[in-house]
Amino acid sequence: MDVSEIWDHLPAFLAPAVALAIGWMAFRMKRGRVRFSAFASSLVLLIMSGSMLIAELILMHDTVRRPNVFSPDRGHVAVTRWLVSRGTGCDYVVVSVRSRLSPFPTDVFAGCAANAPNEPQVKWVSNDQLLITFREGGSVSRCWQGPDLVKGIRVLCEQ
Image (cartoon, rainbow, N blue to C red):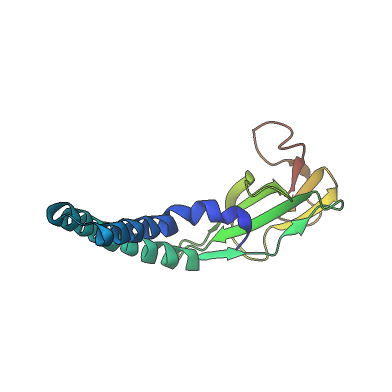
C-alpha cells in the first residue's frame, strides 16, 4: 500500500477507533443512565463500523498495485493501481502522481485496461514528463482533457 492510499481507507479504520474510545470513556463514567446510553451507542457504532471495516478489507483485496515509479530526480512518484473486476473483461486502472514528500496524489489517468497488470506501462521520460504506454510504437498524445500540466508534470499517452 502506498502512503497516498491511506486517505482512501482512513474512514474504515478511524470509525472503530472512535467507537472504542467512546466505549472506554463510557466505561469510566460514574452515572448509570448516561453511562449505559454512551456504552450502548458505542457498541452499536462498533458493530456498524466493524462491518464497514470488513467490507473495506474485502474491497482492498480486489485492488492490485504496481511498484511505484520515481522520476529521474526522485522528486515525484507515479502510482499505478487496478480495481480488478470480475467477469466484465476490463479492469479499471488509475495512474496517480504525487510529490515524493506528499501523501496526497492527483489522478492523471483513469480508464480501462484489458491486460492488467501488463497494461499500461508507466515510465518517466524526463523529470517533468510521464509516459503511459498502452501499445508500443503508437501515437503519443495528451491522456485527458484536463489542464496541460498536473503538478508541473506533462502526462502523455502512447496508444
